[in-house]
Length: 212
Image 1: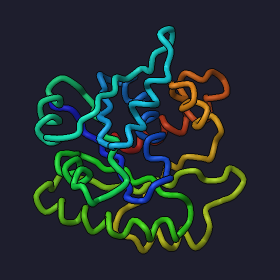
Image 2: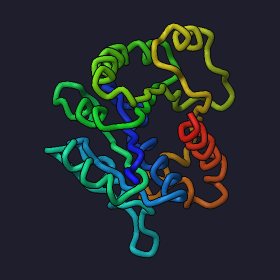
Image 3: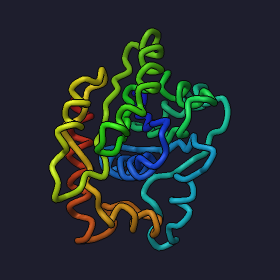
Image 4: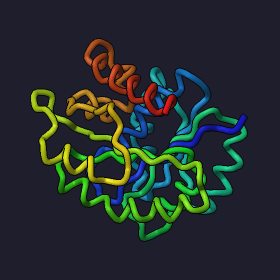
């Protein structure tokens, strides 16, 4: 069976793209063989995994692919149940478009403000073009770094309602454990009690995207 392929993309930096990719893959690996494809020239996913220790390696392998992305993904999809692609924060190189062209789903992490959502308009246009020939592609917006004590602003809720891409019900809170897991080359699943709430968020996200 071919892998289910998830692209994580946003042309705006600082939205938590790699954090989502790494923890999403860690959660998916509990359900089947999973691989992370680091398609970002900055190599953040590879650096993250490189910080893990021999005693506690990151639970998912990370490989970097700089060229022939669609061909390499097609080849690897034979051997895995899930592929997670950490895309570069730009549309200029065509890498994100190549990733989306072979993906089943694309997750667009965005910060909880209308301004950050509106910055994704160009990405939404690119997705519409790709859906012409990749008709199975399902895009979703994921609100990330939501402040625990603050509900989503009314302005953000209205902006989401007006956007053409559906927003997931699942959100990720702003939690120090996400940053700490990166520093330790780990995932929130491996952070003990302090990572439990974050792991539950990732689990809820995975259940939603696997059943949507």
